[in-house]
Length: 159
Image 1 (cartoon, one colour):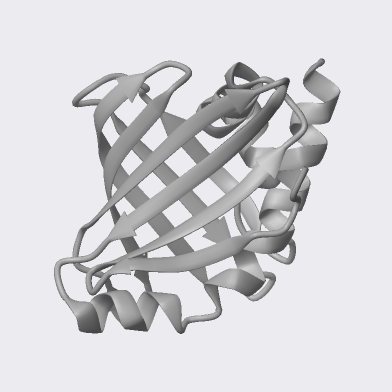
Image 2 (tube, rainbow, N blue to C red):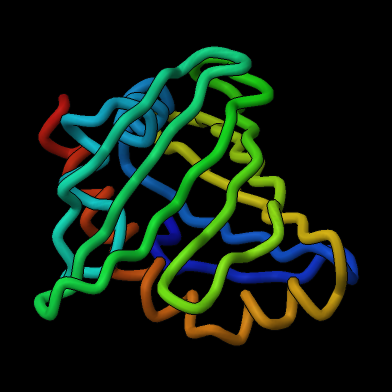
């Protein structure tokens, strides 16, 4: 099993993040969609997550608020476009922080299970190459890699 995060650029507008988890896909799907699990792994370790709202249905919204120790808030919001448990999840997403709000981008996650191992691939599609490159070069790997390590710990406990 490959526990490393792989980031690729399948098109000028997209980047994809892939990692394997030693758990059935239903556990990985639940850990990514149920607030009691999401608060344990999503975001940077030095941020708290005082708000984790999820209405998991097509047309349903979510809102995650992350707060730094100096009180600065970063918010992820969006609307679910596709919910196929435990195979696929797609949603529009906007990132906001003081002085910056992104254009909406599309996030699609697929969960493929083979022999008890789940391969999670999350593809983020931006409206422009510049937006994709900005997101990709923001240090996303430095945030996603430890978050996915925490996600692996959460799904390990679910068995």
